[in-house]
Image 1 (cartoon, rainbow, N blue to C red):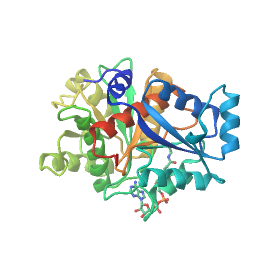
Image 2 (cartoon, rainbow, N blue to C red; image 1 turned 90 degrees about the vertical axis):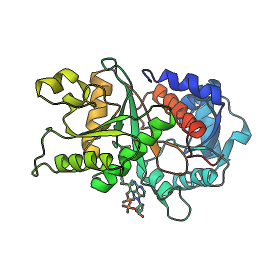
Image 3 (spheres, rainbow, N blue to C red; image 1 turned 180 degrees about the vertical axis):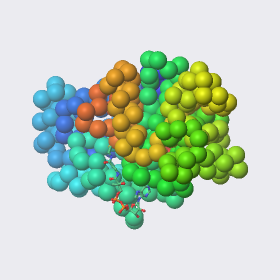
Image 4 (cartoon, rainbow, N blue to C red; image 1 turned 45 degrees about the horizontal axis):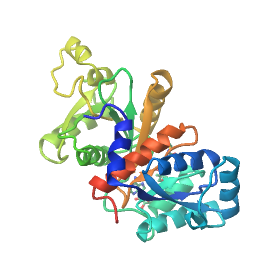
Length: 306
Ligand code: COD
């Protein structure tokens, strides 16, 4: 059972560094986390972007990178598509977003012929280390799929389950979240959650125990579930929460991060390789932990070319 994000670092170090293509790398914050992950033996970076800007940002941050670690491009869009191409060509194992807008980055990832799409849905998984919870909690999808339908929600759950299974967690417990734990057709997420529960029972979602609809308190606290007369193996011991949509997920993870001192990591699953999609406001440690997680998916998953 994982209780701390630092466990990812220790485990990843055993499998050796993985090659990371960083799109639009010319930024001190990005380069600092890259250097830290490199020093810790997690990655070998390929810094994609304007070469002068990368050297200037590195020098400004007191960091040194070899010339052969820089892949020169002119525009930001070009740096995104070049970084994606490096992964497609097998020159990098992991893709990372540097200092560019999420839509420019994802546009390059989602390109039909030259992107990193597979036959699976791409979805994001946050891994939260929350001081008041007894294990790491996964939140999905709080970063890519804006308003997923039920079939997409099943794919989003499957991506997160596969991630935990690849990391050695047997039969992760999943809560399909809503505002209430009874089915109310006026709250569509309750209906989706009930279907996802049944889909899991019938093998349409594999390798997990899915319950729903569950309110967040019932998922996190066995006592809260008991008070509501709810009997569920997921209650109080949930590994993965599926949020109804991107807004709910985004508010939930930021709430935990800013008001409950949670630490975060996160990657995109379902692509040809793991993708690190941290945002500008994330602390450097979140990037390092995300890279450690991506490294582990390369080692233990089937996501990588290498
Ligand atoms: N997985 C696989 N293929 C996808 C996915 C996905 N999640 N999303 C779209 N596609 C495919 C479509 O089937 C289509 O073929 C092509 O990509 C383009 O699809 P569109 O036109 O729906 O895609 P976009 O460009 O309008 O939107 C895709 C985004 C992922 C950019 C969009 O969903 C988005 O903006 N998400 C929110 C990102 C964000 O701002 N996050 C904030 C926190 S970091």
